[in-house]
Length: 285
Image (cartoon, rainbow, N blue to C red; front, top):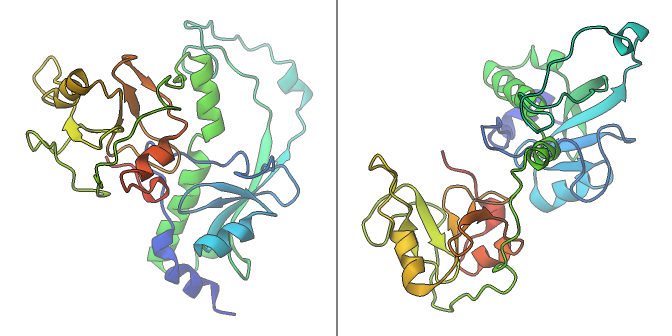
């Protein structure tokens, strides 16, 4: 069996540090109801940030070749009597929301997490203490990834907060029966430009014909040149996806006809029509 530090060095390029906007699935398995409190804990892929229960993680490893996973084992702490009968004053909420600044506080149960990196297929374990004796480049990348994963808001928490804060997007009425032209258009994974003005930012791809066009012009003159909106007005094609926001978990989709950001439950299929593999895309900042 190879030395664990050598294994980490060999897979270092597959270990990512979460960035703002990355969706971290550390509360529940992608294929079951397993969570960090379940027997065997939860394994979080350190590249895609998807979570897997003990019975599914090897399947993911075998399919993708990913070797580094953050293993989270969570146990509940017993609450002390003084904590449950605290007389400390509670803040008065200033907005109708839960779990966000100014909203209603949520009673938090106390947990203790045991966290380590597990390297497949040999299931070699690496703790923070083990990292201390490893090369600087390994120690820095792995410890930053571990810290970033543990401090990031989980997808479940983010969705719950959005739900109570009234920010959940609705399924577009156009998504299920969206007409897509067989025009041979194939969109590259990067290097986009507005087809009319050459702008390289604030770009939207129409999901009916694959046209890549710039977004709306803002009041201060920045943004785009309204070419995506004008295209809708000329064609009636209602849905567009913002390029640079596509990840395996979704993307920003706008409905011009509904005049709102929306959900598209068939987004992977709609993107694949134009040659975009949603599972390999990353958010661009």
